[in-house]
Length: 302
Ligand SMILES: [Zn+2]
Ligand SMILES: [Zn+2]
Image 1 (tube, helix red, strand yellow):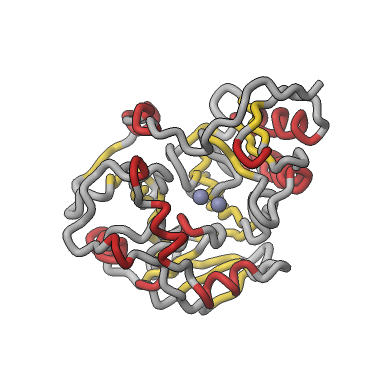
Image 2 (tube, rainbow, N blue to C red):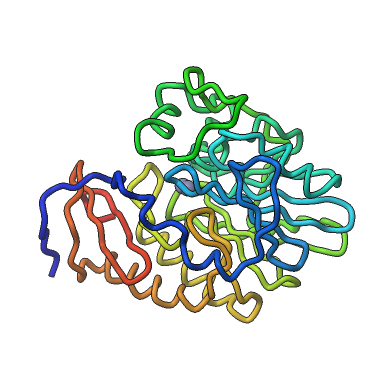
């Protein structure tokens, strides 16, 4: 049964900060960071989480160090100087890899010379690299209750936009990225966006999942999102359980136990099969709430 139970509510509640600090971070080792915009955590296996808790997306970028080079996973909202933050942590050459091209993942892309992204069939990654995101869109991410921390000194909100950037390596499913003594595998996992990838490090037993899963509202309603594809991607990630223990999402909390994907798959199947209750959001979107996460679909339930 699918029953709309409530009138429309805002997509982003103004009181989002009440979730902070999120409990999962308490178990991780925080290290000092020059720029107080970022909270930096050491996760073991020469891996760092760089968390933006001051803005409602609560974006997380990750820095993975090998012997010869480093991979940076996503660049968040583009408010503070992420390149300088990475340089505090390593002097290795950095390959930036985007889990997908949404605005809250490519904010500081323009600061990096080597960028890898998945060449998706809808051309989202190519279009985003060519155009960036203009001020009229970008400013909605920093207005009103979206930000609670003071902006960094060099940041000018009146001209804030996401500049275009140059992708230097187009990725395909199964590609191996070699950092020297450490390899990361590219998995094409659509469902949230047409260009969504996961990154698997079998040595560190970590899986970067982008926006495919996090402890929050997971969207399938944006262009190119699809609940059927999301179910298929969850199934693929669960088949790979023998090779990793922890999920590294791009929002809210890092180092989540992989077993939560079993609940996510069960929930996503209910959404797909139209058997769950939902709240009606603005624009007719549907929110299916589960214990530690939710799915938000379009008005058509996909
Ligand atoms: Zn996204
Ligand atoms: Zn995101």
